[in-house]
Image (tube, rainbow, N blue to C red):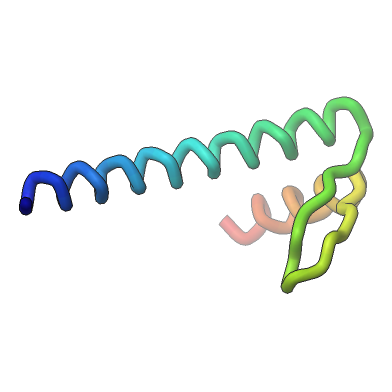
Length: 64
């Protein structure tokens, strides 16, 4: 049974990593095409513009 739990944890880690990569690619594409993305935040559907994505990326790169 322990090996099944380990497999499930590995699968969850892989899925989480894939979702993070997909979200980053979606943000990259939105910036490149100057379009927004629609996300759920705090239970509300919001649109984040390409400009907002650019600004967030700039502020994150400065923080590093």
